[in-house]
Length: 239
Image (tube, rainbow, N blue to C red; front, side):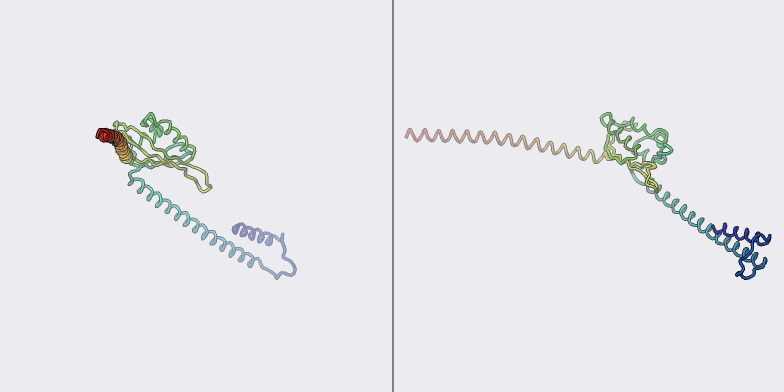
């Protein structure tokens, strides 16, 4: 807008020079040199303002790009140093945009396989948990949050329990542009829970068995007490 004003002043000065435009009677006389000098001053000022604004815009963009690079660097350092698998999926490009190195260790499969075909993970899911896993993937792709626990079998035939979570990623307009997920190996926790359940079942069984033994013993004691009473009653009758 400032540059447009400068162009307007130049246009007015040309009209003055051609005699196509005159000043009102009450205005002081202005020479062509004065008008040209004012025009150049205004044009120079506008140029400086535009330059400063452009530099400021460039500095803001540079700061934003620097902050974005630092943020991405921190994200990658975090994702590459945790035991959980972290992945992101770009819905617009319909592709996996990132998978953390832990995928190799946890899933026992190459990262390149997941990049090429993320649905290949379903081949490792236990048949009994496959419907749940398929449901979770539909929720992921729909941009919904979901959390499931499922059994998988790695390519080396090592069984695992995993905890898979997914959540949407939104842009500045709150529009879902992708999804992110975390896969954790919870095998140790599941095995511990199973061990606790086995111990609890064993204790419950022992309690039931002990209770049965006590009931039988109480019945025997009651029977012995009755027999004793009957014997004493017979003896007193004979005496």
